[in-house]
Structures are given as structure tokens and as C-alpha cells.
Image (cartoon, rainbow, N blue to C red; front, side, top):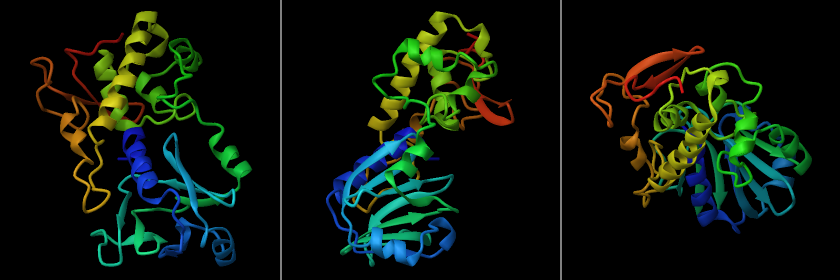
Length: 271
């Protein structure tokens, strides 16, 4: 899983190690993941410097010094690893972004997970995203307004990247639990106090996860001992049959619009 906390941690790591560094080479073992021509790669990627690294929703954006963008998506099971030719990830990598002796490996990448875009193309692709879950401009009232046209379950709406970006399957369950709301609760019945709890829970859950190193299953480098420490802190996600951390209830797995969700029915109500 790679949601806002995990990707924000990657953003920090990549910026720390590669911002200001020159891309000296790129190797792709599966042409489908990066459908740029050899001419484009040599002209617009190799030899260019990573100016800075940004996270937009569930994407990472490497800004190059020629104005182009490398847009990276990490789907289920995909991860990044900083190493060298001698220090490689355990699984085969589809991407090797080379910075001299250092290499950024991309493992588990799928079709079009890496794209080379102009500024205009990048904004056309990402401009439809809703505001980031941690965007300071996303006030409580604006947050409530993002859900105004939604009539279904709150978990489904939280995962809609056009409503609020950055939240996926795991943290939507954790946010609902922290707010005391069932993930299958229907949005139209929510009162203002319900939205206040949900808004506060979203910020607290996401920030705590970032602070704890997220829930990623793979270290970013051989020296990384921080990544993944939040996995053991989940209160409901993927804990079916286990005791609730707040009461004597048992965590259940339910279906929400065709997706699995985890809930403590003792702690979480319709609003």
C-alpha cells in the first residue's frame, strides 16, 4: 500500500538524497512502464538535474531543470529503493534511475507508472485532483463542501481522489475509526459535529502515520530503520478478528461498495 503518508515519506527521502543531483542514466526493463522514446529520454532526462520533488495526491513529481516533469505512480506492491549496483532490492526492478554511483530503483511498477510530461501535461493530468488532505487551505467548511454532492458511504467518498486526494483503502478505515464513524455510514445523514470529528481525525491519522514512518513494507535504503513502523499501530485496518484497541469489541471486515473495510461496531456508529 502506498497512500499519502508513505508517499510523503518517499518525497522526503528522494529530496534528501537526490534533489540537486544529475540523472546520469536510466534503465527500463519493461517498456510499458515508461513509454517515452529513446530520443526523448536522452534529450529530456539523461543529464538533467532533479530540481525538487513534490507529492501530488498519490503521485510523486520529480521537477527537472529543463522544465519537464517525471510523474511517478506507485501501485499496489510497488516500492522504491535507494542503493547502488552492488546494493539492490531483493526483487527485480523495472526502473533504475541512475545518479552516478547511486541508483533509485523502482520495483513492482506497471504500465505508465512513470511518465515524462511538460508542465501543461502535468497540470492537465493532476489538475482534476481534489485538494490534498493536508492542504492548509482545506478548511473545515471547504472540506464539508467537497462532499456536498455525495450520497453514498463515507469510505468510498474519502477514497475519491477528485474529492480529497491522498487517502486510500487503509487510511480511510483508520480515519473513520478515529472519528467514531462507520465506513459504510451514508453521507447525507451527517451532522456538522460529525464532519468536525472526521476532519480532525483525517489530520491526526495522516500526520501520526507520517511521524511513525508510514506502513510501507520495504525500507528505502539499507540505512533506513524508520519506514514501516506505523503498520503495528493500525487500529482497524487488516485486523479482522482481533480485539479493538479501545474497547472489548472485535474488528470486523465488511463490504463497502464492493471494497473491503474494517470496523469496530462498538466504537463506530452511523454518525
